[in-house]
Image (cartoon, rainbow, N blue to C red; front, side, top):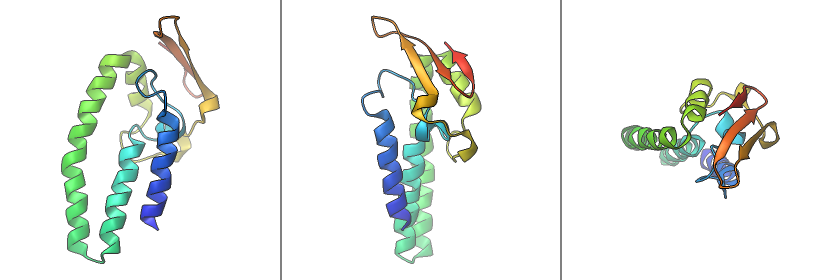
Length: 134
């Protein structure tokens, strides 16, 4: 059951970043409740697989492996996003938890929009919950 929920969650995340990932800071949908929803749902997959084996040792091993590997990946990606999006990413980090979701923060895609210059340069983003950011 947990693996199924996590799989649907990963599909939901993929829907939000598809076609935008390298050009725009995504702050809506699953990315409005946690900065790393794909990794959160991956954590649920790891946990669900472990639990399905009915082995506490195996489950703890998978969770430990995740806890050792993913923070390194997350920090590397955050450095990249900080360099790419600057203040907009800093503002996003200030209001959005890194890993565990906070459902009260949810915003749909229609609650946010970005303005881009003709060269593709993003001038800023408006969010219904936090206003304008450059």
